[in-house]
Each structure stands twice: as structure tokens, then as C-alpha cells.
Image (cartoon, rainbow, N blue to C red; front, side, top):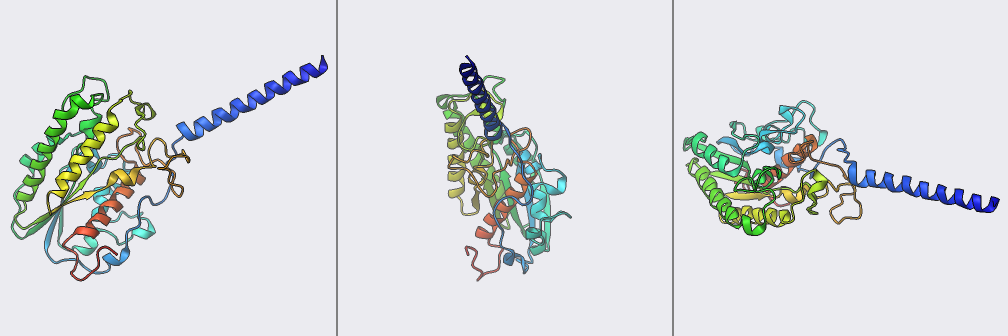
Length: 318
């Protein structure tokens, strides 16, 4: 009897330990999303910021949604748009002096982005609020669009154009075509407003589920065709950029893989071992403060790669 009792106690103990270990592992790898600290995103080569790029009058314009408006940053000067312009007082050591105002002395800025806005609203904003610039002004335009078309209205209402959450790919086909027409018009209208020339840096749409597509992991209803529709939107963005010499794709999608809801899951191909942290804000659709840092770096690196403002003879692809 005593031996049987000991066996039962050992069995209970083992089961208890397994339950504790399983629960701890589930919390650690599926629920906990630490944000980490310090710099986030790719390195930006400081050598490009040792000399002025141009004496031209340059206007930096922000167009888009809450990402460009700065939601999720801990303060206004930490938004990716404002960090493009100048460094905040508490800038990371590796980014001090790395900003557009350091190399473009005649820089003007205007941020037309509106939190919660869709691609239709971006078209309206460009038509109504982006004024025709003087011929001596060169434009740098950063644009984030399309994300709210996908995620609104979070499954609370039947899917429709510019609020298609929960749609099937068949339902969304016409709306995706509409997005392409709007984006074409947005890009062409922006270009026409800068007779002195402009470069448009167009971001694609990141995925808070790290490419898994399990919407409940970001506290939203299941969406079976969500990844397919997301991919089609990103394809449209890439095609619109490829069709124009002055439009350049900013790949936020790739940069943010491994920093969404599965950032702790080391067995996934998207796992980033040197920064396995969450770059999204508490609303799961905007970047947090480190996410804004990363976005600023990805935009800067894309500008370094393509901008005609950089002095000739410098290897922009090194």
C-alpha cells in the first residue's frame, strides 16, 4: 500500500510539474510580448551624413495614416517622420547627426497624415491639402497607405471597400482594383504638385502576425483570407512603385517580420535572435516607440539607396 501511494504521489508531482512547465512555456512563447530597449532596425551608415547633400530648397511631406502621423511613439519627436527630420534630445548614439536636416540645410516639412485614415481619404487629402509647389522646390514624400483599408472595421461590420476586414478574396477582388486606381492617382497627383521634381517613398504594409495569419493572436476575429488579401495589397504597392521612376518601395513588411505576435517563438523562420521583441503599439496596428525607430531607419536607408539629392560620385549601394 505504501509503495502504491508513493507512486501516486510521484505521478501527481510529475503531472503538476508538466502543467507548470507547459503553462509557463505557453505564457512565455505565446502571450508575453516584451518590447525590449535600445535601438531597433537596421544600421544606417553615418558616412552619408558627413557632408551636405544639396543646396536646393527641399520639402519633406508626410502623407498617410497613423504610422506617419506618429501614433505609438512615446512623444512627438520620436515619431518616425519627425526623427527623419531631426534627432530627438535622447537620440541613440549610433543615430546622432543622422537626419535629413543635417544634410539638407534648406529643408521645409509638412505632415498631412491623419490617424485612422484610409486610401480614399489619402486621395482626398492629396487633392485638397497638398498645394502646388514652386518650381525651385524639390519634394521628398513619405507615404503609408492601405493598412486601414485592410484592418477596418476589425470584423465588427460587414466587409466593404476601405474597411474589408473579414472579406473573402473573391469579395475583395474589386476593392483591390479600386485601391490600385486610387494609389495610381495619389502618386501621379503628388508628382504633379512638384513641378521642380520629387521622390516618393512608398511603404508596403507590415503584418502583426509575422506571416502566420492567426488573427486571434492580435485579439481580432479569424480571417481565413486575410493573408491573401494583404499580399495582394502589397503586390499593388510594389507594382505602382515599379511603374514610376520617382517612386521607391520602402519594405516595412520584411523589416517587421519577427517583431509581431510571434516574436518569442524561436522555432519560426521569422525569429530574430538578436532582437526577439515586439515592435507594435498596444492597439496592435501601429508601431511602438522602437517600431518608429526601425521605420525611420528603413526609410533613411531607402532614401540613401535611391535619392538623386545625394552628391554624384558617391556609391549609394555600398
